[in-house]
Image 1: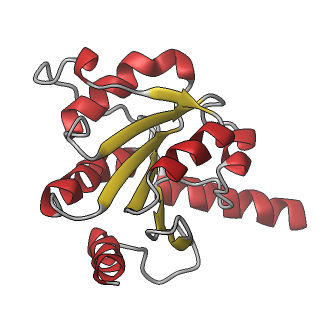
Image 2: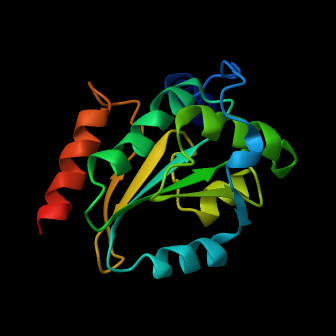
Length: 182
């Protein structure tokens, strides 16, 4: 019974967050315009350390996650809304590293080659080891982490299958604005 409940919970989380549909592709943004660095947790932490002094939003996503692809342009748009502030966006992709071209394509289509956006991809793809390493306890995407100027994690936005309402882009905007005002 407990095992069945756990499987049902995992299925619910997966269905709320991600689907295995592929994003629409256009030829407007060639994949070679977008730089993506493969990282493990230590390398990710080093990127965050270099961004100390800025408010940092980390957008954890995958190409096979429909809501992730749909929300990805929002993260890039935030850098355009806060161009003269101490704000940065890091995208952290959880596709298999062999799918780097598709990842670059989706990033290009979403505007994530913009100034202020650092694009990373987990060396371990979307494995459970990767989710553990990057502290995504639910294992569900999309997932966001918001760090203050000192590099301290201040807020996490993640799917909660028991919640009456999930987080929205407006919730992320408000949290970013609050940290920028500090």
